[in-house]
Amino acid sequence: MKDLGKQAGLTLVELLIASVLGLLLTLGVAQLFVSGSDTFRLAESIGRMQESGRLAQDILGRSVRNADYWGCLNFAEVDSILDETHTNYDPDLHDFSSPEALQFDIGDGTQAATGTVMLQLKGARSPGISMTGMNPSSAVVDVSTIPSGLLGAGGVVLLTDCTNGVVFQLSGVNETSLKLQHNTGASIVPGNIKSGGGCPNGSSSANCFPDTYTSGDIFVPFSERYYIREDNGRRSLVFDGLGGNGVVNQQEIVSDVIDMQVQVGSGPQGDNVINNWQVVNAANLATINDTSVTYVKAIRISLLVRSQEDGVAGSLQDVCYPAWSNCTAGNNWTPANTADRHYYRVYTSTYSIRNRLLDTSP
Image 1 (cartoon, rainbow, N blue to C red):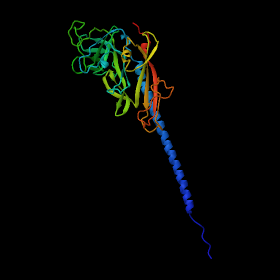
Image 2: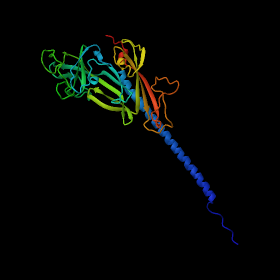
Image 3: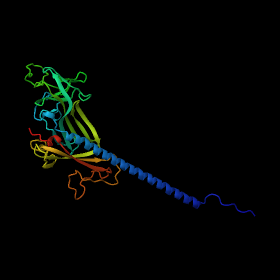
Image 4: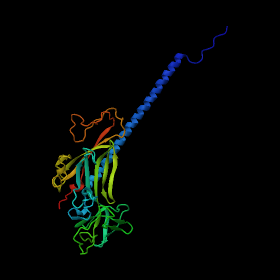
């Protein structure tokens, strides 16, 4: 009688056990992958959010700190030969003869998102350009240097000798021969016009300035607006303005900035004291925008930034916004959409307006 052969292979029970163990191992690996992927998405979202918040703070901070700087022009008489009758003339952008260097507005949905604060800043930057010669009846100013790309036709500049100043629009820039042109005519908008009354030297040229200049410096006045724009449910911090190369149309500079609210710190002119803080809102816009009533020396800006991706938060987020709100009873802001799973973070900074903290009394 032959012996039975030894058993080979797996029994059904062993196969089932191996399958279960393999399935558990696969589920574990899948769980690790999903967990790692979620962690990566969360870290990336928070990182991008921090990047957006810090970039917005840096851009706004630089602009606020440098606002209301006019070089030696602070108490000089300033004329403007810009054509104020032209349809493209915008006082908010082009008025530098008697500028309010800081202005605020509340968005109504037309340009800025409803309820957000719009910030406008004016001042002048010194590019190190000096006037070397000029025929009072001509439309050409000779200068010492022109940094490459800084100035262009359509840009607005300011010439001052610290006693008088004149704002004009460039009709041409020659970086080789170092000449700035300011012709009248329709080649640029809004363009230059003769200020009237003839020229200081007695000629009737249409291109002369209201005052005679034998020396002076060229400044680049700027007018910059920052606000929150809404585009198909997506919000961002945008910029437009005027500089040495003309009007800068609306440009997005930081994405996913949802809201901007502002407080202003004010006090008497001529010292460093800030004795009052006010929230910018529709009720007090008129007084805050009037320097004779409210001399703003510092601005506190609170930004609400959200993650680019939805679905990274495990639940509906809430934050204390704006940062100066009383949130002792709990956070006061949540998204209107209860299904929203973006992450939100508040970034708040206070910036001094350097040129108003100095003793600027005449």
